[in-house]
Amino acid sequence: MSKRIGIFGGSFNPIHIGHLVIAEAAWQEFGLEKVLFIPSGDTPNKDMHHIDKHLRYNMVQKAIEGNEHFDISPIEREREGPPLIR
Image 1 (cartoon, rainbow, N blue to C red):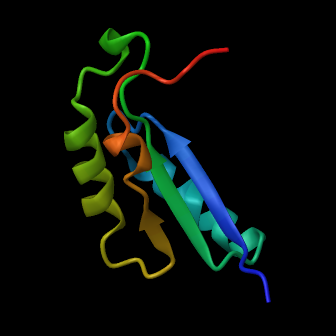
Image 2: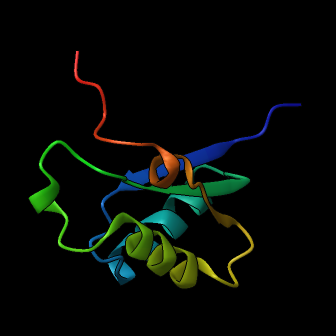
C-alpha cells in the first residue's frame, strides 16, 4: 500500500500562518497521510535568506509542533553549499 505524502518546500523566511493554512488545505483536499516541510538550505544567492538555514529549520519545526500530519525533513539543512545548477 502506497503512502500519499505532500512535499512543501520553500525558504520559510519566516514561516507564517499562510504556509500552515496551505499545508492543512492540501492535506485535507488530497487525502494526504502527511505533509513534509523542506526548508531550503544555502542558495546561490545567500543574501536572499536573511535568516540562517538552521534557524529557519527550527522555526518550521516549532510552527508544526503538535500537528500529527505535518513533518519536517533536514535534507536541505544538512546539505553543504548551494544547489547544483545544470
